[in-house]
Length: 314
Image 1 (cartoon, helix red, strand yellow):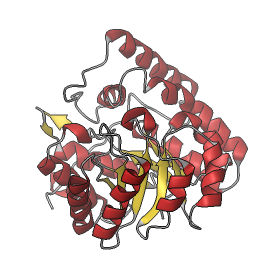
Image 2 (cartoon, one colour; image 1 turned 180 degrees about the vertical axis):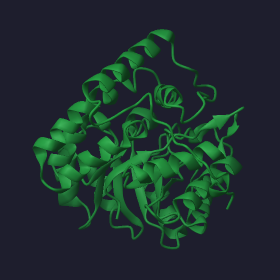
Image 3 (cartoon, rainbow, N blue to C red; image 1 turned 30 degrees about the vertical axis):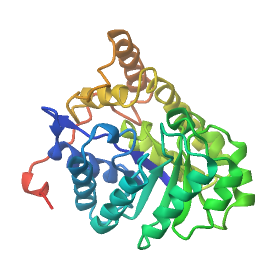
């Protein structure tokens, strides 16, 4: 159920408020482009700067607009176990298909503390699947393969979003984790290697910009057409690399604004990218348009909504 191209969706703002109209447009656009799943309010969705009401509202909007067309994996992580439980329960009651729960950041729990954190979430869950988000570069702590094996035996834990860039972990997880444990990459730049070594998909930042190319690449992997998958990944590679020149999601939001999909707004302490970064991204986008115009068009992409009633509040 959780595989292929899954977008780590941005949260659009207008006047520093959630832009519900743009958010609903993004959901429809991704589904029409072949995206296999959507993750609202993750890192790319600026969850740290959303208040609780906003966080829950974004989850509700995305679930409502998707209308069960693709799985919704709601971000419900926190470095407070009690807060993570509350977010998990809300996502479950709102109808999310799964929850993405980042490792507790800043307070640096021990391995036993990490186990207890996810054990408490498992106990609080009424059945919603939980995908662990392991991202040591942001959370400071790492769930090693032995601990991941232990966690996989908890009833609600079904997989991992692995942002360690350590390809060897795929095999090790297969050996230590429960049968059927889902392994999703959290690093666009290493996705080709991740997939050919046994990964099932990617929770992707790049998919915000080129969802169809990402989707077609994963279809190629599913069809064992590695030559086509590699060709499409080569198209994506300049974006894989450039979207993290400055702190994400500011670069991806800049490009989406150039595509007229969202306003270019980002919340403090993140700021808009520098002019030199804009120039780099503009050149990459221009080159993509020129080289692959038979396959993709970027600057001219628009999502035209003629009936505003389609975008209703749940």
